[in-house]
Amino acid sequence: MVSDYVPPLEYIVRDKATRPIKLKHVFLLLDVDFFGRPSWTNSNINSFLPPEISDESAARFWWRYLTAFQYRLWRDVIRADHRRKEQARAAADSGVVDARGQIDPAEAMEGVRSPLVQQEYRRGWNAVRPDLDRQLALLQRLVALCRDNQIRLTVAISPLQAWNLDLNGPAEIDALTERLSRVTPLFDFNAVPFIADKNEYWLDNSHFDQKAAAMMLARIFGTGADIGWGELRGAENDDGRSVSPRPTEGGMAAPRAMNETPLEAR
Image (cartoon, rainbow, N blue to C red; front, side, top):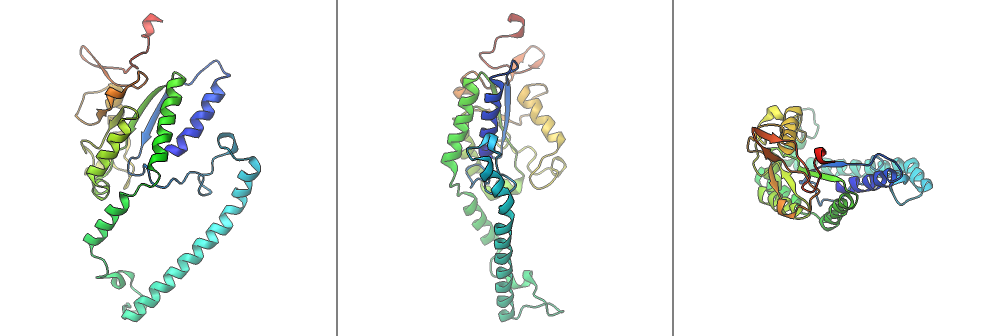
């Protein structure tokens, strides 16, 4: 999430300020289906930001690491156990048990919620993005950080599988992508869902494979034929530091920021 990216970038920029070699280019891949959702940054033991890139002290950082797993794990185990007991009582009252006298969860939930009701519930839940304004502000901060430090920024929106597009709502995804493109130009790989329903391009439900990645990079950096996938949006908002392919005779050349001095003129 964007909340994971800004603190490390700020740290790198500060660190590079004292070194002869500067950061020149940032590539940012955003998962639009998660953008604006509650951030897990600094919320669990797997996502604590180290003191070097956060505002908290080393003592508090290590205290959280040493204690987080105890209270939260115990609490979640107790809650899960309570839910299982409640489900067991509900199933017992309904008489739904299998041949061994054990509860069959699928049978217990039969008729409670139809697939259509479940999908509508998911779509409604997916439209709730309580952290949207803060994350948009963080994205603006990241863009400004790149601009103020002469860092080229390339942004792309990850493609989604067909089921994920459906549950989030294509219109919802498109509207959010449009809003992001007002902050910085970006390549949208959902405008044309080229691989959404092609299983050969997916490692699992949410991660595309190397073949898809290669096609995305070829589109972004202009190193391959245009197959109509990956729409450049927000180019009119370009401040001169983003990257877009530039056509040359015989194909697409490597991209260059609009205000970047050509190598041969340096």
